[in-house]
Length: 404
Image (cartoon, rainbow, N blue to C red; front, side, top):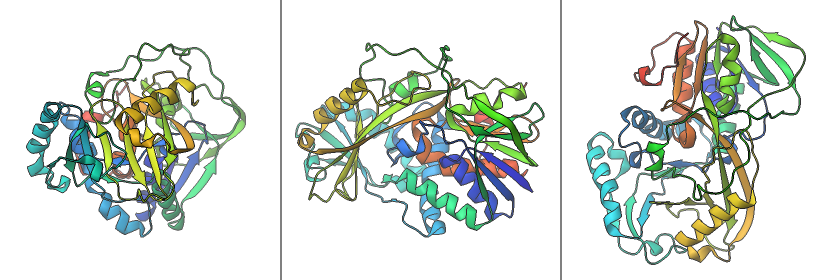
């Protein structure tokens, strides 16, 4: 069976991997647009603390996290995956009680989170932290290197016979794939769709923008300039895993998919000579997360900005991340800034992720927002099942796209 996967982020790479393992003839089309979410992801795998009122969201992220150890074994290489645990921190102990109750309720169906315990001196586990914080430890939480996961999945897919083509994919109304050379992205003023933000506002992973009153640039759309006539790519099925660009790719099908970009800026710093590889993930009740990696590196992020297709690192964004990061971990004051990253997280305006067929031959898989690395490989596996006409491992009704 010939399957074209449009998009080579974490979801598209996973779909290609699972398809190639089952003998499909796979072509991955990589648009190479600036602002791809996977390279700018922090790499947090801790689903149990979020989506308290949304069972569908939680089920997807929980199952995604549950499958990571098996995926690590299958790929057989270092993807930066490590169970380092997560510290949920707050200024007041009482602020930890709601999430403690949530974890207690979920434990029986997700014992992989480990036994949640109070930590009286969190600075012993993450020395730069403020010594005024109270904390709960979730030992089953893990971190992973997004770029490494994506690269490993694509390498495995290539070994299984997949091909990668660079260019911008366009669909015809019949669902045929045309690949064009990619020119510079254009941007035009365009209003963003309305999004549900109430759940994310109460999240331990994705808070509201730190400074919602700050002026924002005009929203822009994802207009792409395609050059030449384009080259058709034969396909029996198509998976559109184009992240925030998915709505535009699918527009010729006559399907309105309100997928929009949510910008996240993150900061990488280094504490020279300090072993940060096994420091736990820090998830404050409000503000940015922090997590350690090998090579004395700490990642701090991320902003939450609905500014359209504008993958720029801004002074205001960095100011938000630095100010909040130092408030949580003042011991990072003298850390060396190594790099900044920015990504456009795909958000599906009506609510949870967007996974399912939009026509008889086209499947979409996107909208994972801040949970791309947690649920991305599992979502890719679901998309592969759908493309091959097989039944996915979970009920995907809650994620179904609107059918015209």
